Length: 355
Image (cartoon, rainbow, N blue to C red; front, top):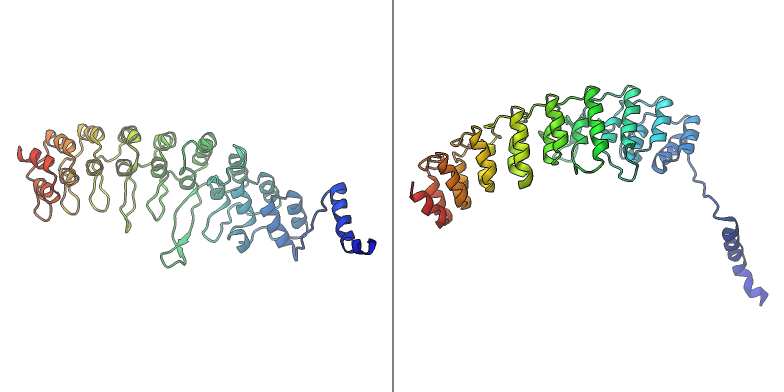
């Protein structure tokens, strides 16, 4: 009987030891100090990081195992305040970027770890700036259409900070925004996709951030010609925002001298976008403030053409009330009435026939 128990005796002893004494810590094998530092970043283990640094770990490599980040970049992105402090005190370069040129201050500004306490990223960015981090640094590379690393990007910490829900870490986000602007972050930074700080704030429905940037001189008309449409902030509001947000942002942008007749690369204006989306009161507001009712796209269509194409009778009436020309033709020689007929919008056809 006892002989039959021998094979399970070692397991029994191990279980008893574990229950009485607690689990024994399993030590990893680190072939070198650099790998030890990598694990310290991943585990947010300050003591292990201290050991690695004492053993001569390289503080400024771009580490493939850390997603191409430097140790400081990785710690900043995860909100590891104590490790950030340790690395900076030990001589880590606060301006060394990852393979895309993304620096620690940009990584922190992305507010990527929702599990860390509010204020963590503000503290990290403050520490980085105190150690000489450039608040206006911008990314240098992006992944091209061929899937390879390609020169050109232009995103700075401001562009990375403002996207996302305006309620997510709202107070911290605004405090970081103020700090970055105070320390020289470029208000009119623009990346290769045409995104700007104020444009991203608007696209994220963040009225407070947009107003702050405009008050400090951000250009609401900035856009970059791309293969995709180069949208000014006003056009982005008209085209993409939810109805309840459009009018407040239109008023804000016009207050800060947005070009009411600015066009994207296809010649579309904010008014044309509003006509396409049937935003009656918002279109009325632009018309009252001088929007060109006869502005044409590169295809020759006007706001009235767009409203007729969509079958929006009330929008057609509004435009006609503001003296839109019902006889105006697009590049194919079509009037708004002809467009309405081609789409079978009988209500709009009846309206246009009376003019």
